[in-house]
Length: 190
Ligand SMILES: Nc1nc2c(ncn2[C@@H]2O[C@H](COP(=O)(O)OP(=O)(O)OP(=O)(O)O)[C@@H](O)[C@H]2O)c(=O)[nH]1
Ligand SMILES: [Mg+2]
Image (cartoon, rainbow, N blue to C red):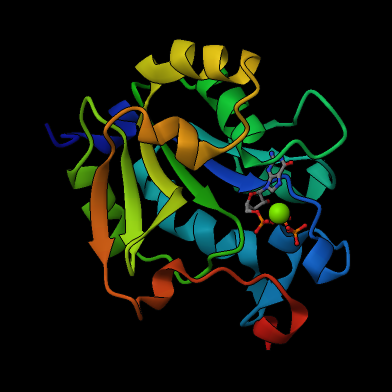
């Protein structure tokens, strides 16, 4: 069942809570790509889709605030990984579906998001490129929160392994689809 009226059914979390180690410890979402912070590019794409735009960040809250309706932070300070941000977002999401995107993929476009959302339903959706899952480009039914809480208690910290237990639908992208490319290092920012 595709999502008929996105703003009424969709919450969004932009994941920006990482350590940015490969970026010299800098806060990736705020780094400039083509003249603007990476988070601004993501914000442009998702803003029309939701009235519940959540950013998961662990520092620089005042800089992220203009790009979100709500900010969340991990409940531990040791960078437990992206699944922590997804869990926190599912706990507060106001709508039945949660669109997940990483802050360091500024080439995401409206067509990619439409294709992900068109597959949304009872099963989670993940992008797939060149035979590999891209777990941080996903649509998760909020009804899966109890499953995630249980998995988290059992020590699961991998988004992909958790979602694989729920027969995810794949949005198959071509190997050269640059919309899924992450910018992990300073060289790639050039
Ligand atoms: N909330 C939260 N998000 C995270 C955490 N670690 C990574 N992320 C986010 O998950 C996405 C993918 O992570 P990475 O590309 O590895 O980013 P990173 O961890 O900041 O960078 P490295 O330290 O170089 O691995 C990015 O959007 C990060 O902001 C975390 O501990 N908590
Ligand atoms: Mg990382």
